Image (cartoon, rainbow, N blue to C red; front, side, top):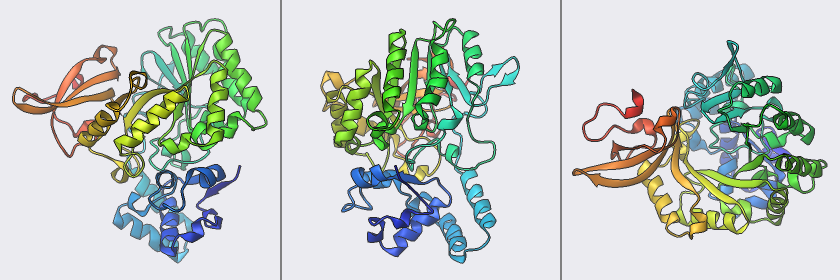
Length: 424
């Protein structure tokens, strides 16, 4: 595999087709936001005749509108001047810190404790599910430009989740029998060699952890590097590990991120899906709704239908999180609901396992059920798919309709109420 980043992306022959100003703007934005792409994406997923409007190009290459005009101009001046790299680094960090680098209380409200010690590199927000961030897996084969985990890929002091302490995870799970699910996430844990994946997963198969029923792996390798399951030197060993998990009675779910049907179109991706499914693992598919990439109900309907045809399970449509270059990608909640509704109406029942549009906000995962009129007031009808307090789950509530709202924090309670019930 060959990687391209800010340092060498201009060596790509395809990039030479772009005008110099466009190439320069990529370099400027990549000075602030993480940028990496690999040869599989470049050669097989991007239609270079449609650039810059190709969705997979928008997904992986920076665009100048990801920075505010004044931010872009300030960074561009330093890049042109070729001055002290420390000045550029300092300015980039100032801009990043204004981008809400860790939304939904991740750094302050979700970190568990063991004997009075905070377990860095773990999160426990929902009662049944613990997240673990293996330190060697805090990178990706390519970086999505909307990624809400972008602080994992830049050097923001103290803002990176990572842990090598699998013993702490095991001990924490032993003391918390209410936990049924462990999610390995990142970054992308599947960028690790199989020996390290095994190092983190095998301890969960031992005695004393029978209550841990489901092991999940959040990964984008099926999109960005499907050869991980086909031709990589330790691909066979990885598939045998998957079989081992299933054979020992655990449910193994590969939480795949497919943002566009193009990612499912290659023979290699489809072969990788077949091989993963043959181990007994399940593939569940999720993606945010992202302007410039997939803000079209036809795209989503095709995506979900293709996933089911390939034996995968449509799982979530998310609202893109309120972090990073959100103004470039965000879509109003009204538009998000309409895209979901129109796409959902085109599906058979087998595809209607998908949930959304869902906001992973500080109190929990909040889904938009509809836009309705109640007591002569136009409102958003909402409910919790998952909640910081389990008692909130599946409780309906209403917010005043606001056509400009793009996130839960933009909404106000309906019917003259001062606060939502969960704010108490």
